[in-house]
Image (cartoon, rainbow, N blue to C red; front, top):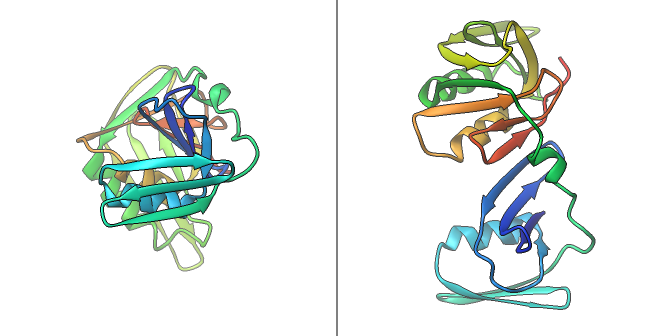
Length: 194
């Protein structure tokens, strides 16, 4: 779901494997969580509107219509431990480079879309299956202890995180190969077992 957390003035969305967060204006209403599809419709319209939250119902009035949906009950997972964690390793590389390489790797990544990323003076993206293999190097700059870090990641998740932000550079921040890492300061992606 998508949590409109007015206590933290932050919108948070997660599926358990990745987390995206954006600052939002405090509207003076209680925090609530919307299902993903209704939340994406609200964002897609990109129009000024009025929001009503009554009990377990969410209603928005936008230019041309209204939408009503049930809120997700229960508490949204506490994201503070993940968001506030230290990530001393920084890796920066070109957005156009990683988009080209990820889209090249996707056809060979198995149905789970897992690829390997190695940081060792350069960023190497690789994957293989029964029919072939793919390996591509991307120039990068690094800081922190980056001597030969290799981790697995769902290539679709990383592709989505990169496409969600504008800019010529992608910035990955991580602690090690097994910890959640941050993409461009607004997305968190969990690594996968290789």
